[in-house]
Length: 256
Image (cartoon, rainbow, N blue to C red; front, side, top):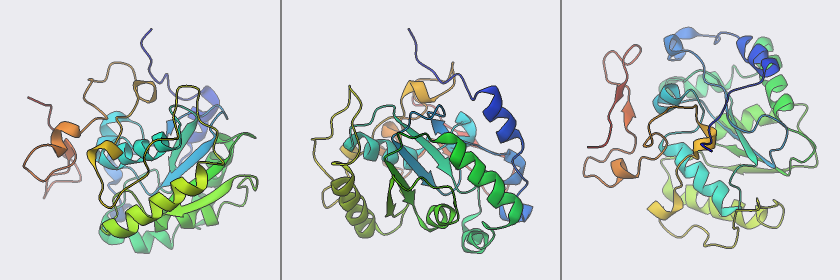
């Protein structure tokens, strides 16, 4: 039987529909709308990954952490032996302009944002949560502000998967894998005994986004940009926001 994500429950759909508008619309790609999650929303997640905000591939998929950064995250989860028992959320449901990221970090505690985001975080996890992985400064601030964070879950703070400091990224992720492997229970079809990160980020450190995390009917290459990374363009994602109309145009290239 084909696996695919059937979408949120009615209760989560109602909660997601109450997402507050960003505090400053011009600081976000607001007209593209919000993107909410990827993974399990039924409380079965052993790991909660919190990142910053959705990118252009995420808008195409309607799911979070699907592009190059998400495929790096999937590789990280794979090193913990997880194939399904995770949920990925973001500090912001709307995509943030990078030039405004630091300023928007200071708006994460706006009352409406704080209340809604904390409710989403708390509703998405259950008693079996073993770890929270906060990726990047925006995610780490959002998790710090989460007053309902389950205290039995270990908190790992690591660089964002799109970090421009590859040494810090690899050192942080390598240390987190070492710390979390004895804590996180692998899925039955997972393996947490493989190699950790080396000195450079390899293609083997990526994993495609599983079909079970994506809506029915998406093309098979969505969530797997290995063909883009293997090219000589220097690009890492098949989806991009072209200037100067990046607020209203996306470019999505399929493999030849």
